[in-house]
Amino acid sequence: MAQPHAQSGQIVSVRPLGAQLVQASSTAILKAGQLEVMRIVLLTGKSLPEHMTRGEATVQCIEGEVEFQGGDGAQRMHPGDFVHLEARALRALTAVQDASLLVTLCLQAG
View 1 (cartoon, rainbow, N blue to C red):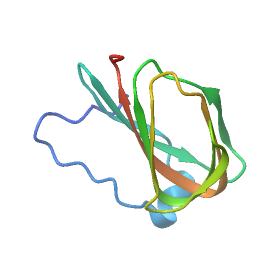
View 2 (tube, helix red, strand yellow; view 1 turned 90 degrees about the vertical axis):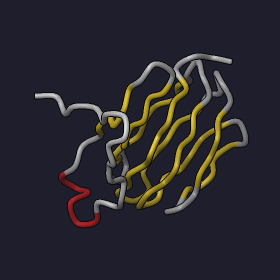
View 3 (cartoon, helix red, strand yellow; view 1 turned 90 degrees about the horizontal axis):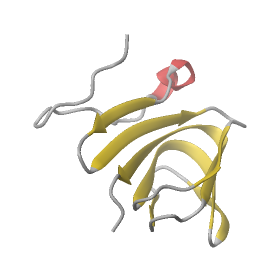
View 4 (cartoon, rainbow, N blue to C red; view 1 turned 135 degrees about the vertical axis):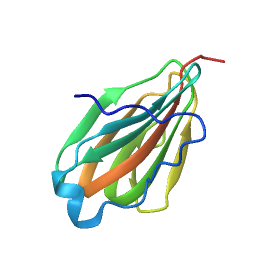
């Protein structure tokens, strides 16, 4: 059964998962008319291959460590790090340590 998306005004936790991280899976938190929010879980060595989205996006590292590959080359993201991506910007992510990320997508370009 699919997890329901958050409703308008509903508080949802995006705190670090801690010890539960290794059993967790990626989840869609919200999908609305112009916005999609997801918690992405990547275990050490796993990756999201190079991709792009039509609209702008943000990625915030909640816990762990990931290598972010983007227009400026490879960079490490640690808890609390945040990156904004313009529409159609190529990016890839690889977990250096078990990690969870908060990803926000603008579904309508410009």
